[in-house]
Image 1 (cartoon, rainbow, N blue to C red):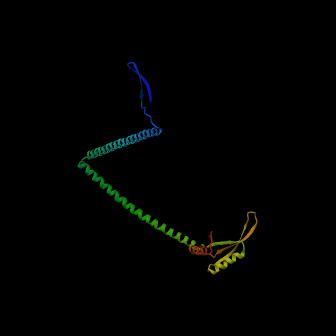
Image 2: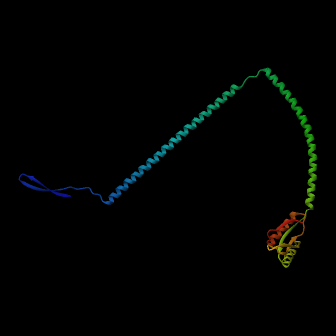
Image 3: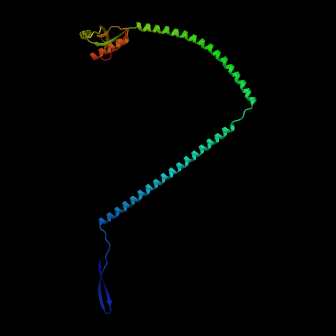
Length: 232
């Protein structure tokens, strides 16, 4: 920036031109300056934050260490105090009191011997009762076993709406050497109508386990579901 200024030198007037240079920043430089200030401020904040956290953690660890040391000292003092009390609690017993104690112990031993003899008699009596009870339990088990042996079972294999389909299934079972028989069942529909259907069942078996083995084989070969084993 320049401007003119008049100066008098003697009788002459001199016009001089003065120039002043002003500092000017472009928009790009301004944005860079602002960004730099923000980045510096951010790093200052982060460093201060982490320094504060580290100081807090150090203070916490120091307090925790002091408390643990205080607890250990307290426990050691209490243990030492307990040992002193137990050592002071030991008292010497005179010989007269020892004799009295020995006589009391002898009486207790005699009483224990009498109690042991009575206990033996009661044990022999209870053993006799147990023998009688065991005999009764054996008799009951034999009765239960006889009832279980006399019980018979059969398996309800499948039901059909027509007798022809049921007979075809029976033929397949005869080829597999599975003894079955046909039973006619009657039931009512939801409308109250009586209908007849045909159920194929196995022969009766005394051994339920044998029947279950047979049923599992039939279920696998015929792909049956919901087979029921009932008392015959």
